[in-house]
Image (cartoon, rainbow, N blue to C red; front, side, top):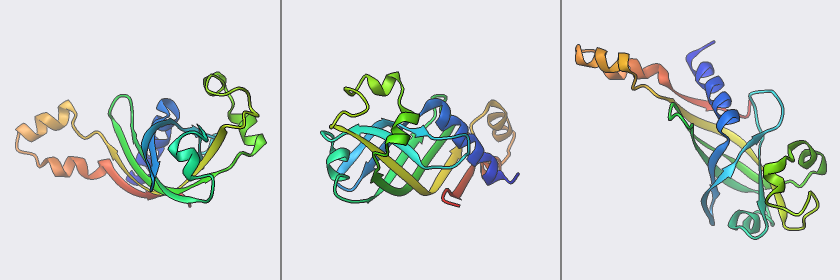
Length: 161
């Protein structure tokens, strides 16, 4: 597995675990949202429940939009910035698969007329792993170039392959 593939695998693992991202598009400031990955593969799309009363819910009600997603893992050992397309997709089968008590707390059932399901098809992303370990700090004190250690900690990846 190449360095970018390893970093991408770590990204998907961290995203499945932590799930909170900032999601936004032109006309809707990025806001914290819970990302859900449907299935076991390290691929998208990513899904987000929102309300028609939010900026995202209103703006997306008419058309697809280019969007961005920003992610930082809870341990701050993985960062990501992704771009792609956001679409409203209230597919009842997907809603059934993704429905859980956390989503239910925000809506009056799966048929709530205010509920919107956003599909985010990420096209590409910049991924960064934490390069500031104790070992890296000691190496730097001993004269090592920190850029060399960090070289394998970042990747630009296509997520729609």
